[in-house]
Image (cartoon, rainbow, N blue to C red):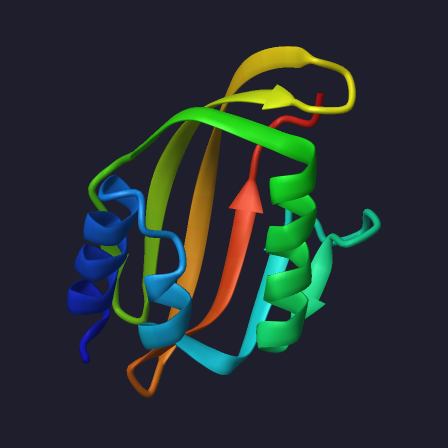
Length: 121
């Protein structure tokens, strides 16, 4: 698959609310996922096991009320998306909205790296 096709599928599935299918079909088993600069606890995970643990932590800590995603911007083997999220932090009950830029790297038809950039609360 070409980068543009991967980006378009990811956007479609995110808009449909299916956040599991992309991991199964678009991601490399050796995926690297980085939050901001990757220095915080859990800020850098590798492989499907790392992604799964990260997802479990997210589910335990946040209730998602709404998510929107932009159309992709594609450049060679890279693409970016803008996400908007309305969430409640379960432990504190604090509800907030945030936006982030996600940058993805594609090699051999799979997403091999994702990095998220956002303002920390």
